[in-house]
Image (tube, rainbow, N blue to C red; front, top):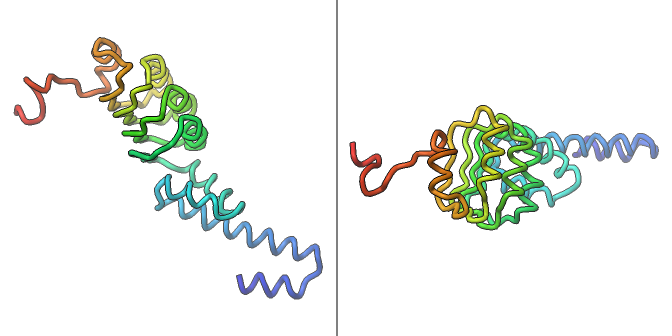
Length: 178
């Protein structure tokens, strides 16, 4: 910022705006680069720093492959808005985000077509209708974790989603039975 400050001191009003835009572009680039190693919750907290940082965060979210909000207290509305920006997400973990419902899951189905793994463990408001939409639109989907999704019946798990979930009777089967 020292170079930019020197430019501002020697320039007229038009060039000053250019220098400010250059500074903002630098902040955007830094924030975007931070997205490659910061978690999504950390990126979201960083959006409060400045408008330029927020713009960089927007770009960083577009590039996110893994979205891990495990036990993050987030509303359905905020999660929906956030996940709509994560179009390249391949792995989404919403385990324990108990305030989430169908709106979030439908947003994932709408925009995250490269999704491979979805963890909705412990989300009691999610219904089979939303999960069916994810299965229909996310062609690369391989794995889902739906334990604790109380509104999804065992019958629906077995008949509709078994190929995506590890389903076993804890009393008879499991990884320890080998």
